[in-house]
Length: 332
Image (spheres, helix red, strand yellow):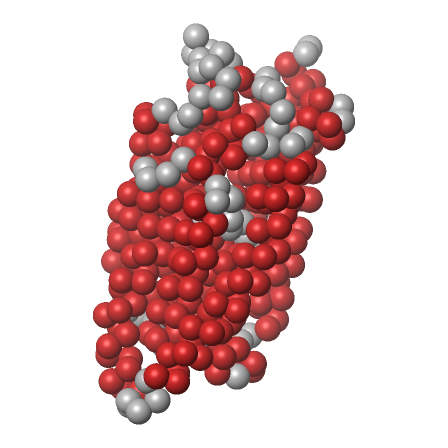
């Protein structure tokens, strides 16, 4: 029942989750490391543990991926091609130290693979893609930016009577809590994409019936894979998000993480596969802008935003290209 190809797809999916762990999770802990509230090792271990817990909590996003993007089922090699396309883009952006979205890389690559093998765009649930992928692609960074700005402004207002030193001491402790919530939020949304892909592969191969939910063993495997990836760390991305874009104090890190976690949890409740990368990066921009616009390194911010917009079209092309190549070998 478990063919060699299906086993390969599951392995690729877990590899994707592993890469997601040291790629995307770096975003969720970047502010805690940059403010020196936590050492990289402490932040990574805490994040790994809470990503694991978060990944086991909900399956709404996983259901969106497994049954809400592509109509019907796909041959297993097509799913493998989609995963390879997403993995290639994740590794490229990691090497370039650009915090791109693993979520959108996976969805874009899956769309590209499905379109090539079906010969048309009719195979995609475009209403779901627009509602749960494209709209959040534009709205979640904007909401993150505004939320970071407003939370920081509010904190400045109520803490004005206190000294900078007293505020930093207090928020050094509070930021550990906000970092923990952020890591949990990342696991509750991001790990589910891979759960959805594996479930989709199991349905396509006939192991699970159409419409089946995510099995517990798949949840645990994905959670463990992401946690291991997180434990290895992602210093390149941490440096870009937490240090190069803006120099944060603990109060700023707290504001960015808290506002980001709220946005991600709301999106998760709606089953929208939102990008942790987009939300935390834009929240950090909002925090910096609340003090003064020049506090943000807008050249770095520009590179991050450009990466957001090109991820889906590029991964669609990658998924399509890898599918076309694999199809040549499958049908030889």
